[in-house]
Image (tube, rainbow, N blue to C red):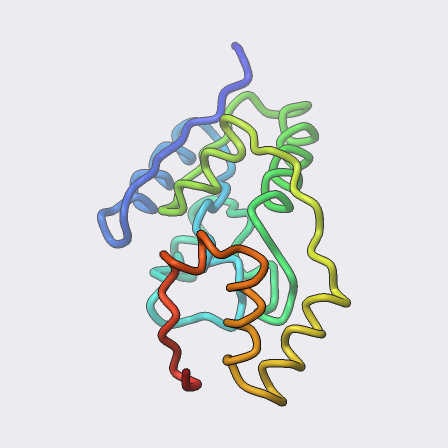
Length: 161
């Protein structure tokens, strides 16, 4: 049998987890979460994470594996899932991926362009500017650096204008 990743996408609370568990049980497969909120162990409300019972029914991966303070992005997810599947498919024929984060599913199934990691020094500088001087200098910097985008971006903020 060819190595197969079965993908079950869809919005929250339509029964994806139940379907994924039934398929995983019948094919003796593991489940990979493609829900970008279920990765974070601290998020318990509003993410429709699998219940303890669900987790006992089939082996799940990429659920509660990160902290909300961890830096994470779709490119890292793609790399981690591809790496996981490479090892997993050495001993298994089928895996099931389910979740509502289409961009994450697409990254695994179709690939994603390599993105550079953010410049941490620049991020800190911009955060410091926001904290110390408010949003106004950042808006002005955007106007100078990218006047076209400045004209179309929503410049309203909760921190003032």
